[in-house]
Length: 379
Image (cartoon, rainbow, N blue to C red; front, side, top):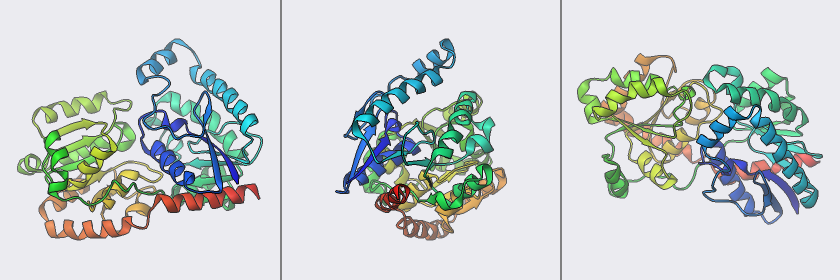
């Protein structure tokens, strides 16, 4: 029996990319009879996988605390390290897996998942506090790591280039896709889409936290360059939590929302998100930088083609099944939107190719390869 200590703190908030990674990986590990995983939840340990867990503090309270208490993140981390160490002494794991960049101190083999280096490549696209914490805590944990997991070959190359990490200890392991994401016809999506005021196949979709790195400003400019009739027939639907530094974007959105040309749905449940993706004409994903990019894969699994950036890891996921554009080129994105909305034969062909390619990605495979890395780390 291989005993693993796993930092499950990413489950203590609405599940975005890293939270989904941790959740699905843990669920697959639970099904392996020779793996015993204890999960760390910031102030204690548990064998259970928490579902829809309540965060320790709301985003608003965190913001107030960070303003009132200098170095509040450092204080929180020191406290979490104490709880982490107490659990380790009791459970005695053979290995510790940190799925979210910043590893706690651990007397034994450590595996770290590194999803991207965006705070280094594009620090201006992150809050200052996040960049400060990453710069302080990431590299010491990286240097202690026995093995490193990345979501793509691209991130492996980034780690060797920026930090000089030995490529032999870095293991690219692709993420998987939830079975919720599958092709659905108009009848299957009707209930969800009707409630949201959408029509199957009649909208462009962008999924991601509203923050600078997702490059939604480009998507808006490209959308506004479409003919008025096209915008009316195919509104742009935005799904995702509000991130940081969004005031300028919200000002741009306001008149478009009032005109009904842009719809903001906010954070959706996974079930609703799957139906909204399956009902889209196309997923628009012009992100400046990604270590993998789950939304394009989820769209592909729904048989929905993707317009995405031709940079970072995204081509590894999309392959030749979508339209890849320069994330700084508005004209390219506008033309790609026109192609998907006005050339149904091209869209249909790409949809079939996207669905076929999505089948090479699975959480089961991700978990199996991850366990192989665990075993390599302890030998």
